[in-house]
Length: 71
Image (cartoon, rainbow, N blue to C red; front, side, top):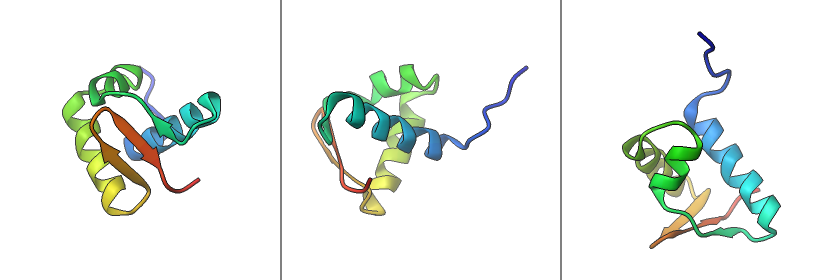
């Protein structure tokens, strides 16, 4: 059984940064469920972590979009 080498919060932030780099846009159009699916996690876990990142001023959450504030 392989264990992830990074914590989920680090994986989530890396995912958001990579997605922003690929799309060339710091505002991402994605639902919490889509992100959870991509990261093999649950929507609840992703929602909680996104809220933490928002409180740390790393992202801004809007309906069906997430704006990356820190690179």
